[in-house]
Length: 265
Image (cartoon, rainbow, N blue to C red):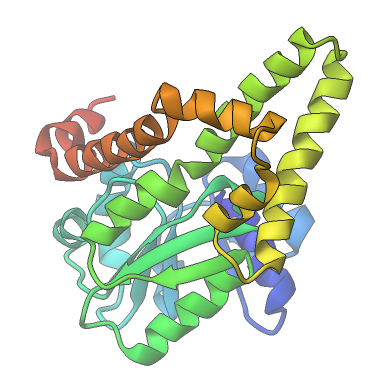
């Protein structure tokens, strides 16, 4: 994810100077070859010249980096975290730093069609927030939210959202194969149907419910499927699933035990 974001940002803002810090030599070399950006192998004084520092590592790794990162941050620098479940409070305490922004991206960032939500500490200026939004927007769409709690909600909706779409796709493909299509043909039918539906929705000014009703003729095939879904409360269960994801995001963000355990892994 971090590499994909770096590539998109460098293409959109070639006049900016980016420095990649990556201890894994193979990853560092690969990204250097693909982007041409400056690289460094460790967290040290090289960070002091940066206006912004982006932290794009697995959440489990974060506590291990704090001791190395904290001494190499200036108070006026903005630190942007794209780690799921790591709160601004955890970052602030671990880094002794308060100019913080938390971002929740999703995997379509890999193809420049991501959806991200971000929340900034009040101390971060409007200009600094706009700079971060500008950088995130080259990887897709970006939404600034008014509370950190909304980041947990975005985790449930857009962060995990691609998995829900792929879950639907899996079952549509299985049904298509049961109806006699080959695996390749079933994948083509479902993949293009989902892609076309998303593009149609984007091109229209009406909501999803209206578009769904436009396809659902009385007594027709679509109505037969939708009535079956409704009979088994598929829609209600989908909504409950997102609420479960939200609750889990809150648990992960608020559990000190999970943070402590990662330090010993």
